[in-house]
Length: 569
Ligand code: ARG
Image: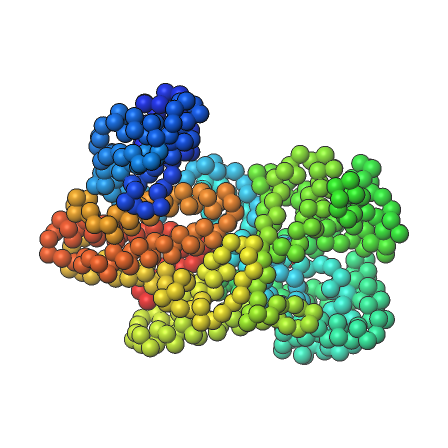
């Protein structure tokens, strides 16, 4: 694809033999204001190499380089070389490329089919699937799609929390206060209620904690009753999660959760021991990490039971053997950062050089109305309830705008769910997010519905043109697209491949979320300033080509953040 920076840097390199084009690319900047050009070279960066003042360099270069088919003019301004592209040539190249690439626009082959394991969502059975897990699910799903788009083979793993001491607590609670009927009826809600009750009661009576430990130990020792209850709780939870995944349109290649590693931990514990890494501490087995200023990584508790970290170490080795990944990415809340640092170190100490390929991708907390969510205190808002409410509210908006719309339920679902995902991906993932209904569902704000609505608006223009029998993309003549809105929109569209790369490199879907808002805003400015379906066929076809390129870019981008792009809203 035509790339303005490379075109310009190649030209400049002819006149600056001291530098390679790649070095010049890295120096080029986008001026804060289009009146200062499309690209600028800050010449102070060259002073040292050329042993001249920036002002002198800018002056000389601006005179040396004549305009050509790519460059309209070059101006020098206080030590900066301001480069103005040949607008019409630029627009022609960019739009033709986007229209030709279509669904592939922005994609690449960089990954060459190499495997990237992404561990995301991973809710804990018997605890609710709440908005914190939604963040993991939406970030992970977006990274999954971005890596695939870059030519990698993504492997999505849902490392379900289906093992651990919480089962001891849950079984204890069930034994004391639960019954079969209530569980079959209330499903996850009932399991959560039992879990919360356990914590309330255990505050008053610490014997319950011992009982819970006993039950978990029985479970680890394959006790029949414990196992049966465990399996029942897991099945109920998985079935409920599936409903949420269907709504979110998220899927996984593997559901190998914590329990999958039960029989795989023993050889790993032995390996740790053989490598001299295990030490005993107050009856427990740990890997000492003092030299790295970290608390020890606990491997076996005093009662011989395994923990979260034991399973993570085992799972990483299993995944390396199974998928030979280039990277294995873990998407969880920032509160788990130390956990990952510790056991990544254990993998390193075991002598596995691929410890470098393990990445923790942390994110900030989610609050609703300013309150943090915690399972133990029962302050949880179930994701399923949030999604249903978002869908319901979107349906109300649709009903007030366009009550006779076809498929309105399906579209309300795509937009309601989209609004929730989009808001989750809007800010840098490490930031805490606070959830507000009014903000996320606003069709005019920087929201999912706004971007989806803009996409549908572009589709509607194309539909009208099509019905009138006049889509003539081949007639694209960029000389008809010289207004500042058209130029700005094209420039923004041209950024898409770089944004995808950046999002992949930083493991940061919010780069795309924010980018899509820019595209939508630039498109709407163009749409309000210019009529598209005008009688001049040259102008009409060229504008339609721009609309179509926008629609393609929005659709590709929405897909990468996990949203649908309805054609009509
Ligand atoms: N189940 C954990 C939680 O909800 C997240 C698991 C993340 N993945 C992992 N391999 N540790 O906090």
